[in-house]
Image (cartoon, rainbow, N blue to C red; front, side, top):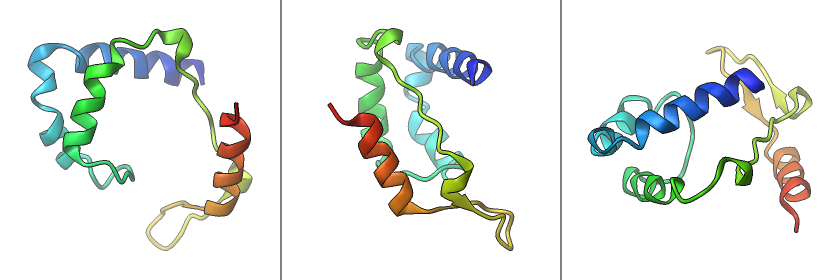
Length: 95
């Protein structure tokens, strides 16, 4: 988990460079099959503008437990049990 956090922080630093911000829509399109989101490329780009205003200690990383997923499926994909994941997130993110 610590190694993943280090990698994500380095990606964030590179992403926030002005020359890379304009590449976000193309990057989202390139990797759209590698992650699932209902955010549009425009919304993701807009979110990057506020990321630099959030300090690292305000960022929380959560990991979905392997009991919340099934797979691998025929295409080696893992399928989340959405009810369990929703319950987990509600518990973790409750005020």
